Image (cartoon, rainbow, N blue to C red; front, side):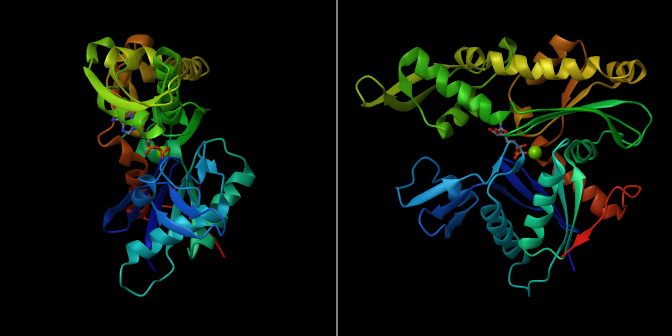
Length: 334
Ligand code: ADP
Ligand code: MG
C-alpha cells in the first residue's frame, strides 16, 4: 500500500508519493456536464475551459476559501488523480495525509476525510497547513524559538506562529490570490470600462504584478470587452496600475500579519524579529511582496524555495520520516 500526501488547495492540488516526491501538480478545477454533472475534464485541461465553456459544460473549482464546497466534484477530482498516479499498475488504495487550513470546523475536517475515503483512500489523516508549510519551507518547527509562516494561497492566507512543533497563534484570512485577481478585474472595469476575465487578471498579476515600487515590471496588453460599446477592446496595463489595484487587499494581508504579531506572546515575538517571516504558497511569488512585508513590519521576510510546493514537501517530510508527529497524526479508515 502506497503512502501519499495531498495538498488539497483552493487553487492547486499537489500529490506527493512516498519515495518518489511530488508527482502531480494541477489546478483544482473540474469541468462537468451541466445537466448530468458528469465529469468531462480535470485539472489543467479543465482550467483551460474556465470562462470559455458553452452552456452545456461547467468548469468549476470545487473548493472555496480552503474548504470543500462541492463534495462529489472534489471526490471525482481526487479519484481521477489517484488513478493518474497509479498509472497502469493495479490500483491499490493509498494511505493518505491531507492538509487542512488552520481553524476549520469539525464538520469541514470530517468532509475532507470523507471525500478522501470516498475517492478511494484506504485511510486518511489530517495535518494543519501552516505546520506542513513550515516543514516544507525548512523552518525549524520543533525548536522552542518562535517562527512565523505566511501561506498565501488562492482562497486563504494563513498567518501562523509556531513553536515546539505546534501552532501558538494563527489567523486565517479569506483574502488571497483570488481576491487579488478580483481586485484587478474591478480596477480595470472602473478605470477603463473594460471587463476582463479572471484568467486574464491572474495573468496580469503573475506577469507584471508587483507589491512594491522597487519591483516595477513594465506593462502588458490585454483583451477584454468594452462595457459601453459591447465590443472587444485592447488596453495596456502598467505594473504601477496593478500595484494600485492591489493596494487595499495587500493592506488587509499586512494587517492580518500585524494582528498576529500583536497577539503573540512577547518572547516568541522577539524570536520572530530574529528569525524573520517565511512566505509560502503561490501568492508568495508576487514580486516585491517580501519587500513590502519587511518594510511595513520591520521584520526580515523571505520567500520559501518553490513556495507553491511548500505544503506538499512538508507533508512529504512527515511521510518519509514515518513520524506520527507525537500522536497528532491519526488515521481514519473506511
Ligand atoms: P492554494 O494552496 O490555495 O491552492 P497556491 O499556494 O497553489 O494556492 O497558490 C495559488 C495562488 O498563487 C493563485 O491565486 C495564483 O494566482 C497565485 N500565484 C501563482 N504564481 C504567482 C505569481 N508569480 N505571482 C503572484 N501570484 C501567483
Ligand atoms: Mg495551499
